[in-house]
Image (tube, rainbow, N blue to C red):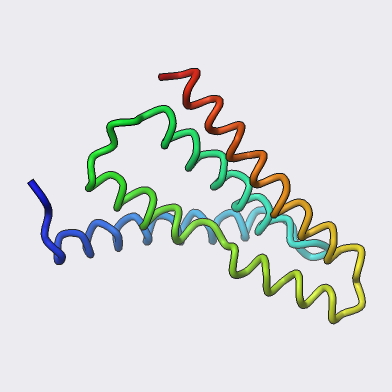
Length: 124
């Protein structure tokens, strides 16, 4: 049975609220004064966990997909923040940090998704 639009919105909003709070907590506890480590941490962990869940739990119901993938991970991961921080580092003349931020988030997060896929398939 398909769920309605209103129920879908509530499910996404609930997951998004949790994801946003988790994102805030990572930003609160991870020092990003010299480098945007908090953004990197959420992007890497989000890539890994999203792939892990996708490949481990293959029969995910529609409601859980909305809650986790659209809501929680949509609010938790921060690719838009990553891109803005990379541009800011570049225009601050911190070219090495801008390149490092790009490589860590673009490269290692993809590897995190591969690792999550591997782990998810191993667990299934």
